[in-house]
Image: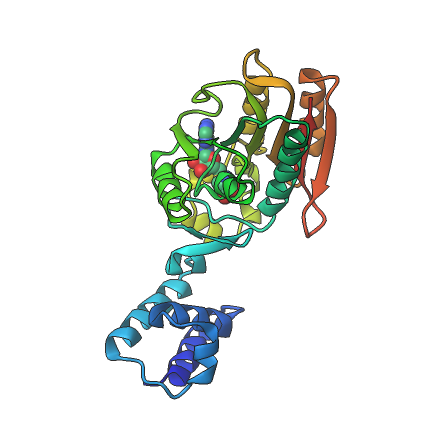
Length: 287
Ligand SMILES: C[S@@+](CC[C@H](N)C(=O)[O-])C[C@H]1O[C@@H](n2cnc3c(N)ncnc32)[C@H](O)[C@@H]1O
């Protein structure tokens, strides 16, 4: 079998099972199987695929037919221009979370500009995409904290720290929300679970069936963890004066969160940012 035949057959199998991006998915899975780049796939359509490679490729096609996300099948996903290992133990980093990274970098650089190296912590770190990206993009940060309740997720985060050579700078801590923190923080980032168990139907089958439930759901309206997180952050000794919090939020949570944030920090500046689809997706709280 040739590259061209494998792509054609894989595409037909995925299309027959109702997959929208059948050809793109088949190409990505073959590129992964053969460990080649996209240009080789196009340049050498007549190149032979061994029977072992073909068997592996069609095994992946079968899994994709059952909606397993491509990132889990190939074991990695790009985020903010960096490549992260992912598997079923962690949420696949989403493009909208890059907005949070951008805002965090800007807040970090404002502090550095006035002579302060901020203490940064990320809560609900999953694959480590947020703190590792911050460490890679801002080398003046000598260390950051990365916390998660899931020891499984932290194992993946550890692999990503090693992959990006930041294991000395990103300190992984296991525990519930802010409990693991070891000192007051200047910049706090969090992309915690914020999907409501009442709104399960908005998730695609591939998310619902494969991504860790502990990374997705947070009470009926998705607000339980965000509420508790904010209440904990407002306790004495957690944040330094003039701290900045950056939280990813659900599309319908702005009103409820604003009420809570106003009660906890009446003087704070709140700034909401929308995602690429126009939904409220992030709030920046500047104390
Ligand atoms: C939506 S995922 C985000 C992962 C990663 N930050 C990202 O943006 O790709 C949420 C993460 O929060 C973690 N989590 C859930 N409940 C938590 C808790 N009570 N304390 C700390 N982390 C928690 C989950 O294990 C999961 O890794």
